[in-house]
Length: 357
Image (cartoon, rainbow, N blue to C red; front, side, top):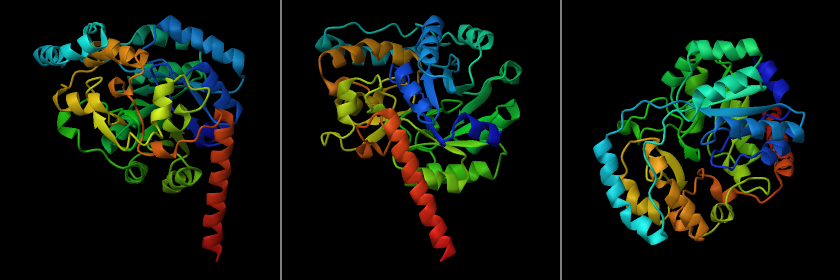
């Protein structure tokens, strides 16, 4: 699998699939054309919306790419807690002049329909977030000629990924921006995240799968560190969020390096699942009270977030960002891949020179 993974991406850089319109075809195509691996995010899209983006991406590049799916979520949310949170957000809805969403809009994100499309018209690689598919699903993709990756945030999850039969594991450190891809959302573990380098080492000693490292990396020297720790490639999200090809809102892009936003935290405020973003007013006021209820809270706050963006107010938006956000560079995506690859090569050469001296 290591050689197959290398064949997919001459440069060991994967553009993270960022849902919500960020990872659009233009971004994935630019990254793949530069030798990395571009990704489409199917999360929060309809099955047909995903299919149309795949068609568009194929018209932009003949290089390999990936598609990311969200796993269906179990119904363990406390409906009473969701109702209480709805009442707490009533003032936000009035302020932005919008309605709160329906928390029961769906938990499976069109999973089965998306599987059917991807098995009928295979893509080079499919990855999964928020859980691990069944061995039968992974075997179906293998028969279709599609490689598979699954996110893991702990050794036990990585072991589950290996048992299920995936081709690689995305090891996500706590530094990563956006949602933590935990297989089971347990509030007791909210403060138990593991740093990327420690997690890579633990997973490397526990499973035999190729590792794609994810979490806070913004420079080639950080990629070199992840590779030295045992990863075969690095997945970067925040670094690509600010590129011209990214579909992120301009306010979101600006916030990455805006001195007004000084730090990130994990919060349930916007979606009901732990996700790392820039600390803003909404997160400070509502994060401590948000219940463990995904995707119910995501659906509930969807209109609020859109209204805040339309009003030009980043204080009410979900500004997902990794811990390295202040290192963001406003470069075209293809050029960013080239710069990261050059930095990686320089870091490797420096390590070799030190080893030889």
